[in-house]
Length: 374
Image (cartoon, rainbow, N blue to C red):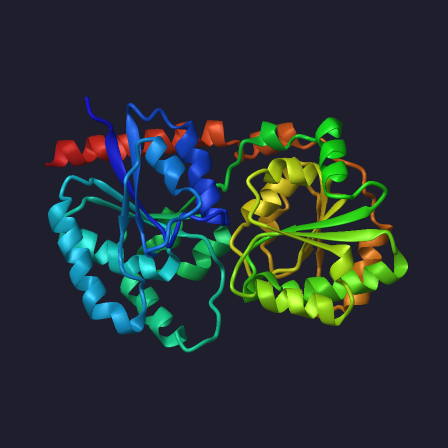
């Protein structure tokens, strides 16, 4: 028998949180039973594209979802589902913009349409009215509702028709064993990046407004005054990276910062950190915080992040209203000993192997229902 093919809808398969979560599940699936295909909305190749194709997945490239593209995009969507009528399940991960894909899927009589929320807020910019419009459209399109946290679900989904009661929280699960604390890997990483004898603050995240890198620099500047042997390691890329690098130069921090870009060995890099810093303006439930807790790190996190992210008790929530110096003081004076978190993360449903089996069963059940109903 051919495997059931699930259409996963994303922006681009780069190494972001939801994309990493999807790959964690995809790698663990029995691909003789279930295969993923990916509808992406960027022309450029994503970091995971080659791996997806190696695993048997297909990648379909669409126009970017922008107000000026709506008419062309909606036409392209309708044509796509005419040409690919065999999907029984569409799983959309692009927050409020999932509305448009699921509306076209509904029109094409696709029986199971999953909207999956990964954020808990919207940026106030020129697209804001269009995002509100998309969220309104979303109300009548999904058959199933997923979210990475309860907060993310409450933000995206309407309270009408008992939507929140039907919502399922699908954890941003990871391969926990890969992140377990390892002193040998720690020594290797610290030697490789010149971190021996340093107090290392780590951050993993895209360089965008949401991740608040400018405040990270302010905190680090204060921390460096008190702890001159400190180093800041920033992992990730994005449209604000150049701006943040220029700010680091302007305030004299560049010699103490490692801008490492996109890294494939996040689990190894976290072994070299002493603490994890994450002052985001808003989040759903970040994969990076799950990974940091799996590595046993104490994490300093903004109170804008949902308390659901505190899976192991390792998160220290601080207000963004507090001065950068206060954040630095908390970080210096905290207990930096590694925590053993493996069993707790597994018990709370963050092991990708266990959760992939649950998701597989979910897809299989929905697929059988679609066949019985047809």
